[in-house]
Image 1 (cartoon, rainbow, N blue to C red):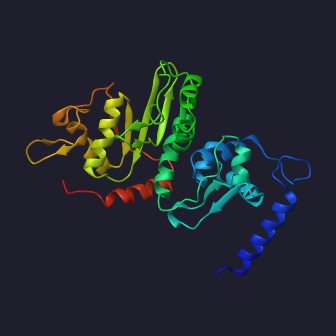
Image 2 (cartoon, rainbow, N blue to C red):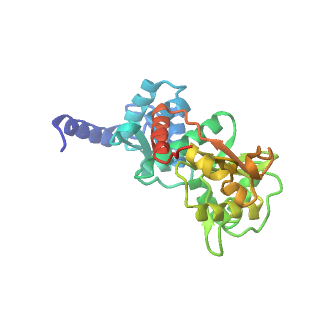
Length: 298
């Protein structure tokens, strides 16, 4: 039920949308900055960001600065803002108008639903990679590039990936074939100029073993390097765990991408498994709670 205060805010925000514009013309009442436009691009590419993620990606961690600019862009109709999920706090994603201004070539993302935690966790991973100077393609960018014949090849060449194959079928370059008709789309693709590119999978929940085997075999068949960043239960499923007497192998050993017996993985092997680390405190706490449900006794 809408309170009087909420109703007044919505009325005021709607009035500002009609009269203040998008911050790009004289008389709008505010001036859109480079940081604002950066947020619009990131929120379109990653689908959803927390206030904390927006602040650290665009305003050097200044939460109140991010809060103010997000309010202005929300009132201008460029961002959606929600605080409906208590653990996440304030989250934002672009409107269609905001996505157009972002200029990424992507449409506005859907409203975050039950996969909100996964969206925010992979955004955390991608944003940290970008902050370290790496080039990241999100799943939305991957799917859009693969939808246009030849575009994925052009994109990788533009980003400096060497030896990009020409004429690959849809889903054979940035994604991998996981069966006769199925395509598996990675969460992210990390492009390393002059060195190639790698898939990045952010996994919070163990998959059915058959599904995971199919995906890993697809990466092996494609000769594609993949980094799995997962919660502790996912890491155990992938690389195994100590048993009462010997090491119990995981799915990575079953498909031949990890050495048996719990030995250290090959540094330049196709499969690299690491525990997921999340910078946003609220997202990290929720990831830990989620992982706790899947823990197994030693």
